[in-house]
Image 1 (cartoon, rainbow, N blue to C red):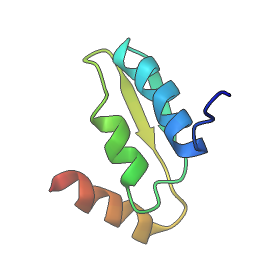
Image 2: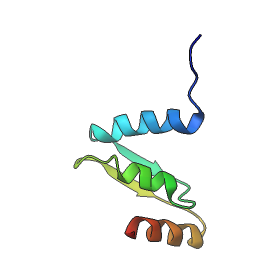
Image 3: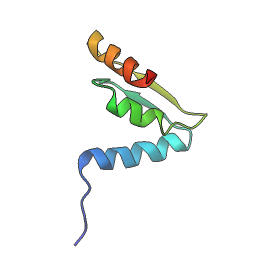
Image 4: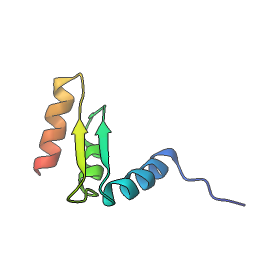
Length: 68
């Protein structure tokens, strides 16, 4: 029987493969910054990551998480 990955693990697998080859990504819900941090850690020198959120507090949390 095949093992099915949880959604977050599956999306991380797809995103990291794309970013590591120079792809670009958008994090449209910065939230607490966990996914943004994950993507930053998988960026190649050719990759770009665009991060958005409608809540200023989410942007602030993400900036804080990325600065530590």
